[in-house]
Image (tube, rainbow, N blue to C red; front, side, top):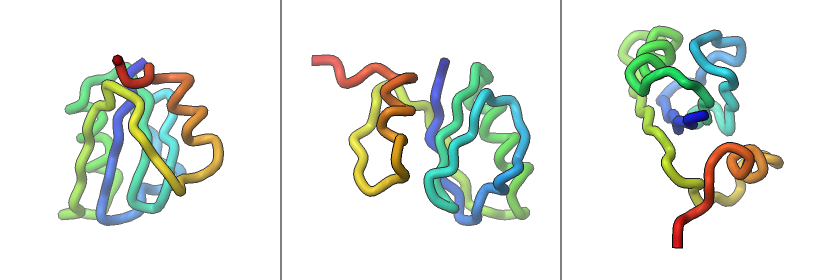
Length: 87
């Protein structure tokens, strides 16, 4: 299932509901979103959940990113959903 990386200038509400299987908040501003919906649909649902005019970036992850200092189990969560780098 596709995974999207979302960054916003305001915290995504903890109880936000949308067209996703899971929204995993990593920090107030950074989230991972697992959804079979399109990038546009995920983006708009997050946009509507945030205060008007809040900066927002949503991008699909085609490979597992390198990361450090994020909540425990984030690497495992990503490993279960996204293949590692192709070599």
